[in-house]
Image (cartoon, rainbow, N blue to C red; front, side):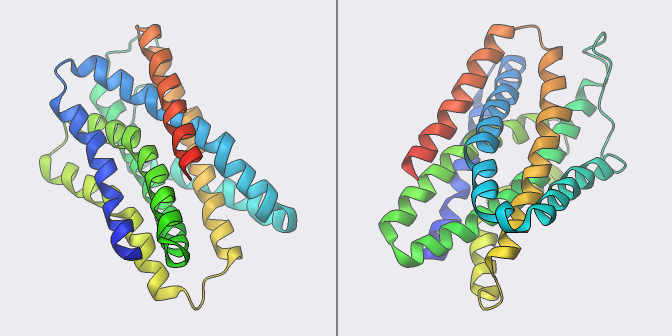
Length: 244
């Protein structure tokens, strides 16, 4: 049952992708997805990841946590060498727009897959103790995944279908992968290793927020739409946290 619940979490990610797939105004939906992702990721960092690391892991392993965060940032920065360059010219927002969105989508997918794998491990563990608590936690995690699915699908919408489907499948199954890993490595897993993984995920998400999402939002024309998206992204995260 625990493993099945982690598998069902991928549905929320696909819901976000379906919203983008069915939308008619692609430009507005694309901007909304980026702003939703910014709001939910920023809230995720401030309300969940930072408090979790500071109150549990960093107290005893502050240096290790800091190094792991830096490695997360550096890891995504190194990936810039292998992912299409994105447009950094704010004066020419339409130049290389496709490459810019692909870049954001690829970087975000990598960080989300890692983060959701860790969350899948957590959901699996909680569900083993209580189906009710595990279900509530799963709903919270699932709500987080809706804007993430919107972001990745809209960013990769013009990519080859096979490539887009592979990335979407990996992101959708990442929580299930976390549950599967728990069944395989639970005898050797400890809080120290989980703390390192969460710290690395924090570094990756910080990189996305400051180096990808903020620059992209600054290029956009409809500031009101961005504000609505950011606010809704925060609400989704808060609602999920409350349910957890």
